[in-house]
Amino acid sequence: MLRRATAACGFTAYNPAIVERAHACFDALGSRLGAEEMYAGAAEFERWQSVRRRDALCAILAGKFPMVVRP
Image (cartoon, rainbow, N blue to C red; front, side, top):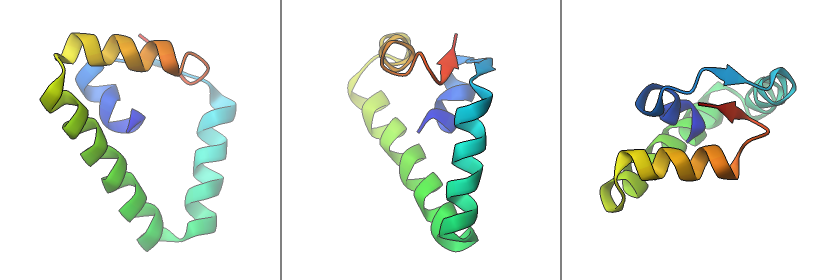
C-alpha cells in the first residue's frame, strides 16, 4: 500500500531499515507471492482512496506510518 501511496501522495523519504526488511520479506515469499501481496496493497490503497479524499488519505498514512514514509 505504501508503495502505491508514494506516487499518489508524493512521499519522498523512506526509512532504509524498513525498505530492507520489505526486500527481505519479498525474497522470502518468492516473486509470485511477493508480487501478489504488492498488488493487494495497491488495491487496498485504491479502496481507501475511493472513500476518502486523496489529501486526507495521504495525511492519514503519513501519520500512521511515520517510521516508514515522510511527505
